Image (cartoon, rainbow over all chains, first blue to last red; front, side):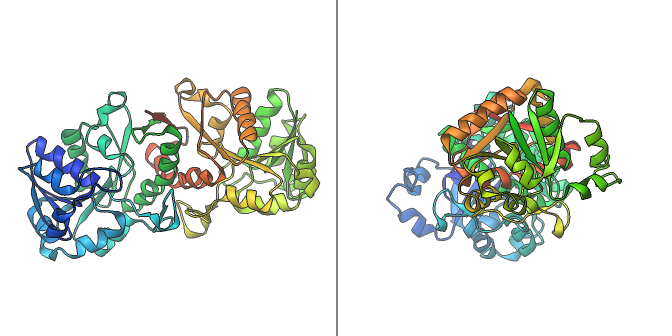
Length: 227
Length: 227
């Protein structure tokens, strides 16, 4: 399948590499291809610059957000939350029409110090803002509650005995994405939290996730829902 | 030990009854004793009126918030979040000075429909507001992430193999409360999330908790942190 991954950061790279590995055709999208390839410094997390990573992933295509949205039969939003609406706005409307958007982004606001707060929360969410601004997309919020390495390999922990959540307005799209989570990445436990307003819940989970990260000194953790 | 439980709702009743059962002297506090005893209708959840419950718990004392704050060597805030600051404000300063306050309350705002939103979140929290307004209290935020029945009996689920969180500025108070959680209620896994600003995390967990409640159709669940 042709899949468009919006965002060239660590999350986009991890998702794109995994999708290529399992046989999909992937284009990874950025605001400006030349600028993205010109970076020669490691990113803020110490990862090598995108161009180095890109050379090591030869079958992967790189394009603008618009190219990537046009290319993908399914789209994945792995941009920073603050850049998500702008990235999607640069796509042609026809490139979005009727497509599933798997929304992984979190509305993190780093401007008020660490740990980050959220730039939208409580009575609204980034997932809702995207669905509202692009009503022809079928937005499914998922994967935003775990670190990138776990998104694509849940069996790194407890043989995959922990939960991932989905939320969205389109029941069929949620069922399809639930299938992708299981087939692409090996998720065993996918919990449907309801419509896209449930993105308030999974995005507002970030503050406790960040505190847990501080306590556990690793991002490699998740929650098992015990009932 | 003399323990003051502020709040006569379901959470206050559950905590108070358990503390009496294990041998503590407990006063449960309300805004107006006569008004609280005069209610003859079940509450919004269908529970019997307070007076009926109170008759069945003979050794338990009932008092005003001020009486209860004066009585307790340790205080527990089980008021509704919207009433917490007013309840504590009605106590004498000397009744609060240097005491541990175990803060269970959540800043739920029911005025904007269901599920409730939060009246404070993101860059502040109810736990912080209490600590800020009553600096002589040692506020420890905990237990606000589970339903009342689980607070006092974590072994109702998975033999207690799931997590409860603590946060607060006073390390000794957190250590003492961690001991209480283990000795009083049988919690096995108490995770320290840091200072009182971590209450933003545990309070902002409520929206996903409420969505999980909707999906699971029970409040009797919790999370196990898998790492």
